[in-house]
Length: 66
Image (cartoon, rainbow, N blue to C red; front, side, top):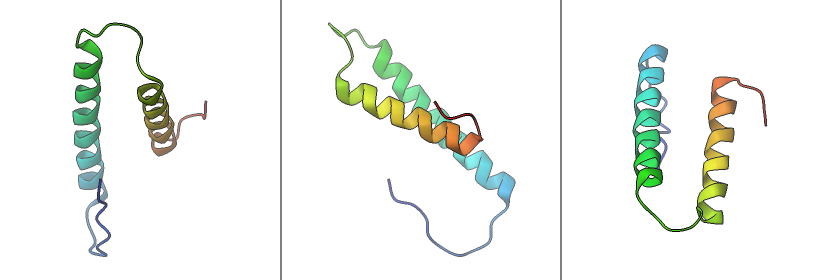
């Protein structure tokens, strides 16, 4: 995913709202993926990606590290 590196000033609340919207959309995609019927256990790749996502979310939200 590309990151905006422009130096224009923006409203912090707007930025947080945009991040929250993207996070919500990402979590919805994860839920849809996990709710889809699949045989067996999640792949090691999916588990690793979800663990990484959770860690980044904790860092961004100031939560305790796992």
